[in-house]
Length: 154
Image: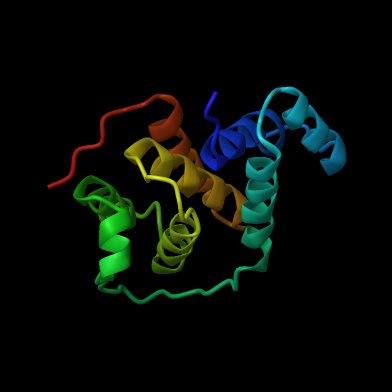
Protein backbone atom coordinates (compact mmCIF):
# COMPACT_ATOMS: atom_id res chain seq x y z
CA UNK A 1 0.00 0.00 0.00
CA UNK A 2 1.65 3.21 -1.22
CA UNK A 3 -0.04 6.01 0.69
CA UNK A 4 1.31 9.48 0.25
CA UNK A 5 0.86 12.86 1.86
CA UNK A 6 -1.94 13.78 -0.56
CA UNK A 7 -3.97 10.76 0.52
CA UNK A 8 -3.56 11.71 4.18
CA UNK A 9 -4.50 15.36 3.60
CA UNK A 10 -7.62 14.34 1.68
CA UNK A 11 -8.52 11.85 4.41
CA UNK A 12 -8.06 14.50 7.13
CA UNK A 13 -10.03 17.08 5.20
CA UNK A 14 -12.97 14.77 4.53
CA UNK A 15 -13.06 13.38 8.06
CA UNK A 16 -12.00 16.25 10.32
CA UNK A 17 -11.30 19.61 8.72
CA UNK A 18 -14.60 20.05 6.91
CA UNK A 19 -16.64 19.11 9.97
CA UNK A 20 -19.75 21.30 9.95
CA UNK A 21 -20.12 20.95 13.73
CA UNK A 22 -16.66 22.31 14.47
CA UNK A 23 -15.60 19.24 16.47
CA UNK A 24 -11.87 18.58 16.14
CA UNK A 25 -10.43 15.63 18.05
CA UNK A 26 -6.99 15.64 19.63
CA UNK A 27 -4.21 15.68 16.98
CA UNK A 28 -2.43 12.81 18.72
CA UNK A 29 -5.61 10.72 18.55
CA UNK A 30 -5.83 11.48 14.83
CA UNK A 31 -2.15 10.50 14.36
CA UNK A 32 -2.78 7.22 16.15
CA UNK A 33 -5.86 6.56 14.03
CA UNK A 34 -3.91 7.23 10.82
CA UNK A 35 -1.07 4.93 11.88
CA UNK A 36 -3.52 2.18 12.85
CA UNK A 37 -5.20 2.60 9.45
CA UNK A 38 -1.85 1.78 7.82
CA UNK A 39 -0.53 5.20 6.83
CA UNK A 40 3.28 5.38 7.16
CA UNK A 41 4.54 7.45 10.10
CA UNK A 42 6.80 9.62 7.95
CA UNK A 43 3.96 10.50 5.60
CA UNK A 44 1.63 11.27 8.54
CA UNK A 45 4.22 13.65 9.98
CA UNK A 46 4.71 15.36 6.62
CA UNK A 47 0.94 15.81 6.21
CA UNK A 48 0.62 17.41 9.65
CA UNK A 49 3.59 19.70 8.93
CA UNK A 50 2.04 20.67 5.59
CA UNK A 51 -1.29 21.53 7.23
CA UNK A 52 0.41 23.46 10.04
CA UNK A 53 2.29 25.51 7.44
CA UNK A 54 -1.04 26.91 6.20
CA UNK A 55 -1.39 28.86 9.43
CA UNK A 56 2.14 30.25 9.08
CA UNK A 57 1.63 31.69 5.59
CA UNK A 58 1.44 35.48 5.49
CA UNK A 59 -1.97 36.73 4.43
CA UNK A 60 -1.18 38.85 1.40
CA UNK A 61 -4.11 40.82 0.04
CA UNK A 62 -3.95 42.19 -3.47
CA UNK A 63 -6.77 43.70 -5.44
CA UNK A 64 -4.59 44.33 -8.47
CA UNK A 65 -4.57 41.78 -11.28
CA UNK A 66 -1.25 40.10 -11.79
CA UNK A 67 0.67 38.25 -14.45
CA UNK A 68 2.34 34.99 -13.42
CA UNK A 69 5.41 33.48 -15.03
CA UNK A 70 6.13 29.95 -13.82
CA UNK A 71 9.71 29.11 -12.86
CA UNK A 72 11.48 26.13 -14.46
CA UNK A 73 11.00 24.16 -11.20
CA UNK A 74 7.27 24.93 -11.18
CA UNK A 75 6.93 24.05 -14.87
CA UNK A 76 8.65 20.72 -14.22
CA UNK A 77 6.31 19.90 -11.35
CA UNK A 78 3.06 21.38 -12.73
CA UNK A 79 2.16 20.17 -16.19
CA UNK A 80 0.31 22.32 -18.74
CA UNK A 81 -3.08 21.08 -17.53
CA UNK A 82 -2.31 22.05 -13.91
CA UNK A 83 -1.00 25.48 -14.88
CA UNK A 84 -4.05 26.00 -17.07
CA UNK A 85 -6.37 25.15 -14.19
CA UNK A 86 -4.58 27.62 -11.92
CA UNK A 87 -5.01 30.37 -14.51
CA UNK A 88 -8.67 29.41 -15.03
CA UNK A 89 -9.36 29.44 -11.27
CA UNK A 90 -7.83 32.89 -10.95
CA UNK A 91 -9.64 34.28 -14.00
CA UNK A 92 -12.95 32.90 -12.75
CA UNK A 93 -12.47 34.53 -9.33
CA UNK A 94 -12.02 31.35 -7.31
CA UNK A 95 -8.37 32.19 -6.60
CA UNK A 96 -6.91 35.60 -5.92
CA UNK A 97 -3.29 36.32 -6.84
CA UNK A 98 -2.40 35.79 -3.16
CA UNK A 99 -4.25 32.47 -2.84
CA UNK A 100 -2.77 31.33 -6.18
CA UNK A 101 0.71 31.95 -4.80
CA UNK A 102 -0.11 30.03 -1.63
CA UNK A 103 -1.39 27.11 -3.71
CA UNK A 104 1.79 27.06 -5.80
CA UNK A 105 3.95 27.30 -2.68
CA UNK A 106 2.15 24.39 -1.01
CA UNK A 107 2.30 22.29 -4.18
CA UNK A 108 6.03 22.85 -4.45
CA UNK A 109 6.38 21.66 -0.84
CA UNK A 110 5.53 18.15 -2.08
CA UNK A 111 9.08 17.42 -3.15
CA UNK A 112 8.72 13.76 -4.10
CA UNK A 113 5.12 13.67 -5.21
CA UNK A 114 3.82 14.11 -8.73
CA UNK A 115 1.15 16.76 -8.95
CA UNK A 116 -1.96 15.53 -10.72
CA UNK A 117 -4.91 17.69 -11.67
CA UNK A 118 -6.95 15.97 -8.96
CA UNK A 119 -4.28 16.68 -6.33
CA UNK A 120 -4.18 20.32 -7.41
CA UNK A 121 -7.95 20.62 -6.95
CA UNK A 122 -7.71 19.20 -3.42
CA UNK A 123 -4.87 21.53 -2.45
CA UNK A 124 -6.89 24.52 -3.70
CA UNK A 125 -9.89 23.31 -1.69
CA UNK A 126 -7.89 22.89 1.53
CA UNK A 127 -6.22 26.29 1.13
CA UNK A 128 -9.50 28.09 0.44
CA UNK A 129 -10.97 26.38 3.50
CA UNK A 130 -8.09 27.68 5.62
CA UNK A 131 -8.38 31.28 4.41
CA UNK A 132 -10.82 33.66 6.12
CA UNK A 133 -13.50 35.30 3.96
CA UNK A 134 -13.19 32.74 1.15
CA UNK A 135 -16.51 30.95 1.70
CA UNK A 136 -17.87 31.67 -1.78
CA UNK A 137 -14.67 30.64 -3.54
CA UNK A 138 -14.51 27.54 -1.33
CA UNK A 139 -18.08 26.57 -2.25
CA UNK A 140 -17.36 26.98 -5.95
CA UNK A 141 -14.19 24.91 -5.68
CA UNK A 142 -15.98 22.28 -3.62
CA UNK A 143 -18.36 21.79 -6.54
CA UNK A 144 -15.40 21.19 -8.85
CA UNK A 145 -13.82 18.67 -6.49
CA UNK A 146 -16.80 16.69 -5.24
CA UNK A 147 -18.94 16.76 -8.33
CA UNK A 148 -15.86 16.14 -10.49
CA UNK A 149 -17.27 18.53 -13.05
CA UNK A 150 -15.18 18.87 -16.18
CA UNK A 151 -13.28 22.12 -16.28
CA UNK A 152 -13.04 23.76 -19.69
CA UNK A 153 -10.57 26.51 -20.29
CA UNK A 154 -9.41 28.22 -23.46
